[in-house]
Length: 223
Image 1: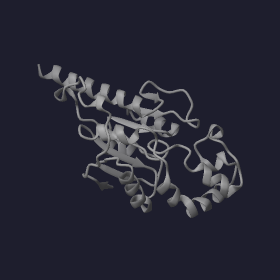
Image 2: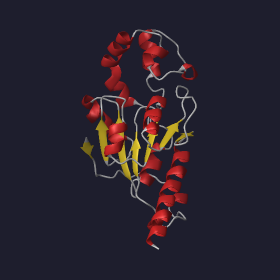
Image 3: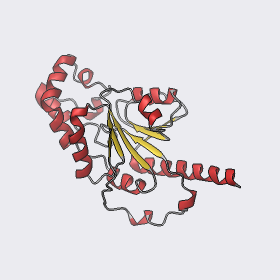
Image 4: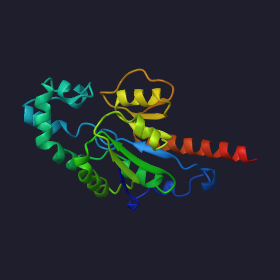
């Protein structure tokens, strides 16, 4: 896991400069964030996959998380495609709207931990992508597996932001608060500690509320 301490600056909307929550009332949160589909556009791989497999799958037809199932191909055929073009696709992936501005705003008061199922060999590509999009982070972990509960425990996650339904269910079962960013492939019933969100502006408001509530509870304990 790489530890990154260099903040990357960017444009923050002026209405965020003087927020009504006092700094003393805000608890520093450990915010864990997935990469693919969460900070990237969820369908950034689709154009290249359609070209390679000579198909014309549209975003609203992506109703499963596993790409080989979406494309109705053998998993080995998908892995061959991924080995050829995966690094380039990750390097050129589009960023979700609002991600850079929101994380820039959260970074000064909270710990930003990137937790991805990508393999270690993609670490440099991932780091360069975050730098390219002016997204400041504290740490980044490439797990090489979709199982993220152990890392969430290690990082003492206060909130985990995900796009995978299965990951959200695993994290939820382990007692973690999860924000599941809405995609065509992650629809389903959710437990009480998983909240479906539409975009990063909604995520920002929820994180503000969580940090403020934690701060208020701590102040009450000190009285």
